[in-house]
Amino acid sequence: MAPNDDTARTERPRARLFVEGDLADGVTVELARDRAHYLAHVLRLGSGASVALFNGRDGEWVGRIDALARNRARIAAVRQLRRQAAEPGPWLVFAPIKRAPLDYLVQKATELGAAALVPAVTRRTVVGRVNGGRLRAIAVEAAEQCERLTVPRIEEPAPLTRILEGWSAARRVLLCAETGEAEPIAEVLRDGAPDDGWAIVTGPEGGFEQTELDALRKLPFVTAVGLGPLILRADTAALAALACWQSILGDWRRRPPERP
Amino acid sequence: MAPNDDTARTERPRARLFVEGDLADGVTVELARDRAHYLAHVLRLGSGASVALFNGRDGEWVGRIDALARNRARIAAVRQLRRQAAEPGPWLVFAPIKRAPLDYLVQKATELGAAALVPAVTRRTVVGRVNGGRLRAIAVEAAEQCERLTVPRIEEPAPLTRILEGWSAARRVLLCAETGEAEPIAEVLRDGAPDDGWAIVTGPEGGFEQTELDALRKLPFVTAVGLGPLILRADTAALAALACWQSILGDWRRRPPERP
Image 1 (tube, each protein chain N blue to C red):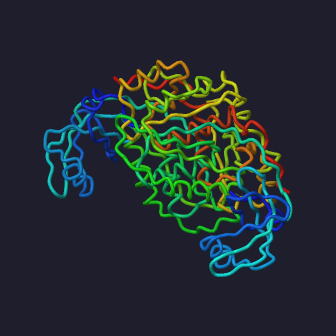
Image 2 (image 1 turned 30 degrees about the vertical axis):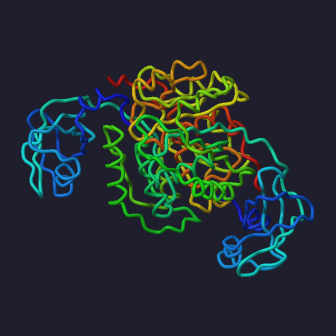
């Protein structure tokens, strides 16, 4: 859903672009072919038009298109719209799944404020390869659309056991499980502190093996949480857990900002 | 995620099918071509194999395949596995969106326990037609997979204003909004009662118009709720609100069942 009235639409730049370079007064940003094409031929913008820029570090800026050609665009940062602010969402540690649900998962997890996306290979994981570049592109596009100031970090796939061997015990893990020993997720979140680091861990389509689940549950930073009586798909479980975290511990606890 | 150990897999039938007819001891169910094909050629089941059957009214049954041919299958209900139980999820009243995110929305809303899916035309709704048959097929498949005992009711599209004109004031509406006047969703749910009827209302990709939002908010059964500072896509907002409802007011408040 986009802003709720037409004023907001005309006041805010119509395009919002993630860039790699630093943003500051007067800095010039060069865009490559696909972004230039998007501005010129999809949005039909021209020289002098405004876009919003962010890089995950320097807040959000109004940029003015100074030059726009078929293969490239040059944009000058002219004014800061928003300062960089903390976006303290949980990490999402997930067993890779098939391409279409994985693409959706990355898009939705970005909107739902995951700070990092960590592909974790479990015993029943059947998807061996993850195209990090594609996932990064999906996360960038989702961050641009949803007005995030950051793009979630996307890590290289690694075995879940190895990821948890090097785990900082201060970061709490919500292990999405489906057995009777799991505690209701809202109960666990209500007893938690927002400022702890958090991670949500979800299994592959085949679920965790029982021995794997037993071993994970013994780790002192892991709490097994349940998401009701139904068998959720892997991507559904991840998104549901992120939404619950945001509503009970995250920045959904505050009213949304005024959108003039 | 599927059941967590191999025991559960061998004890439960591998296929779970929604059927229209009544289910009772000795009743015989006939399946048409596509379902017969699925059993024979995708799952490679034969005569004598077990499947699970449900119809939304008579609980879940073990069925025995008595005959399986290219174009049809005959299955006898032999034993009740689970009694019919209440599945009191909220209604999801949503502005129709493009095909791919709509399909995804119906699949996920079914897993997240929506009792009814109500397409509602708002001022900025640009998708005019909804293929009810396709949505029903997606909901049936999702219900089969996630072990629901019901399939959500899918209504014909109607203008949102008309839907709310005939609204029972006892059913509370959570209107997913993006302005500063919306209350945090967890706060509203915590003050609510599970046994009230509930509905979640989400807008189209372009959001609600301000005048529309103002009019909706004046209705006595409507509470505008916020889902954080970001601009969520329409499907993301719907799924997030359903997950929050289930975790705070729904059956995610109980531990998941033992899966032996």
